[in-house]
Length: 132
Image (tube, rainbow, N blue to C red; front, top):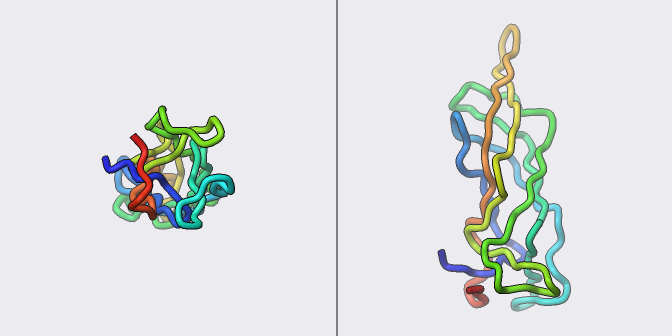
């Protein structure tokens, strides 16, 4: 892991979808820090909330999205680096546990297709500020 600190513009992706890959629209709900910045971009902190909506699993036939968005929280993996006593998020950090959704396989009758997945920071949008 390269340990770049996550800042405004970071990329969060859905990973480890089961039983088949999971797709969705990711929206970062938490604001970044206004105290510490890297080239004008605020850093993201432990517990950052992320909403995943329009969740589907086309490989499993579930092409109708789950009507209920899922909220996940990203957890910091580096425990020594803090901003105002809160841990910083870095590339590779993900949520604890699994997130659950229920996209639907269309047809008569429609069938709920339960899936689990995780969310993970795949790009910190920063290459100069690192945490160790």
